[in-house]
Length: 338
Image (cartoon, rainbow, N blue to C red; front, side, top):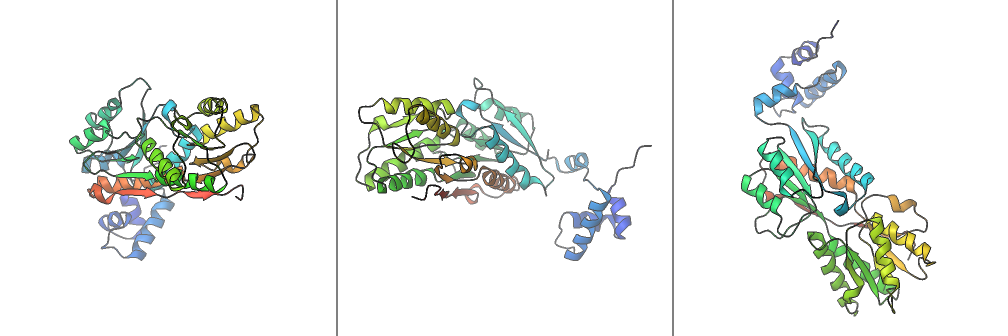
């Protein structure tokens, strides 16, 4: 025998209230007393009530789905496990809403706009989260033209404001230089993401400001832009080591790159803190468990996912983009005590 579905009438009968009152209580309606809302929600949970998504879609014309565009791995700023934390943050922000998350991948050879157009033209979602932003980002321009709700993980240089969440990358690199300079380093190298990405420019600006404020000269050969990966970390350190006067410290852009640097240091018999100092950027706590200990600026990917989702939901409800811009200042994790 098929068990009948728990609906609003079931909950209404259980609490002795009208269907209208129950419906309003489940939506936290301001006209319903807080104690009534709590009583209705408790009863609904015990009865296993789940809103009828199909009916909701028909009534509102919304899909109640938000889409996340997954960038190709070669330009990804965090490894696969980091992406899981990122998605977990988004899902945490959705748990008390009728929205669900769909992930739309983009193949490496695929045009930036293709997955965005697929979502907008197919009405597959009510809003979209995109990352790996460019200064003149065609996806952002297209979404603005279509008046389609979106939020970006990263900034652009486009004239029309848009909702975004970003890390203060320029602050990270500037302060990294200050810390390394205080330790006596004068030749400081930096590995940077590809120049096409907006935050690459922010990191470089902060790095140069840090050098200037410490009375150090910018040396172009000590700044390398590359895809962020384990192998890139190894190759760049190999390149640095071959210089007649190699850098004595490096500012690293991410966990996978940092692990590549550490692996190559081990191969070259270099000792962290003696032959080479290192400050990394991390979105997860992986480096917390690494030996040797790595100093890093930490900005949680899970928290980023939560904030991006909250901003997008507010944008879907019509809040202006100018009010939905957030810059986060990372925390310095001084694991070496220096």
